[in-house]
Image (cartoon, rainbow, N blue to C red; front, side):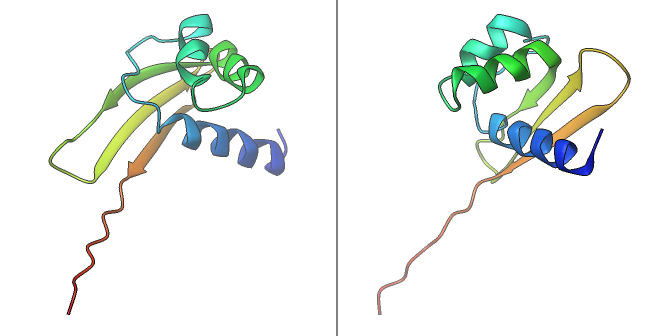
Length: 92
């Protein structure tokens, strides 16, 4: 694949990491339906057709969550980090 293709896929998967309640082995239509709340149905279908969720771990006491996806063929896995930014404003 080309560098731009890989960067685009990484961006789509990074966006997908912000969808909560993904389950192990979500793929195809099940995954696409969950992702279509965050991205267009066409992009969600592409991810569902080509990738599966290995696991998703949410840490309510932390600002760090992780989603692991893998291609539906081959051996490459993608580890997606979701970092929640918490900004505290202090009034003087």
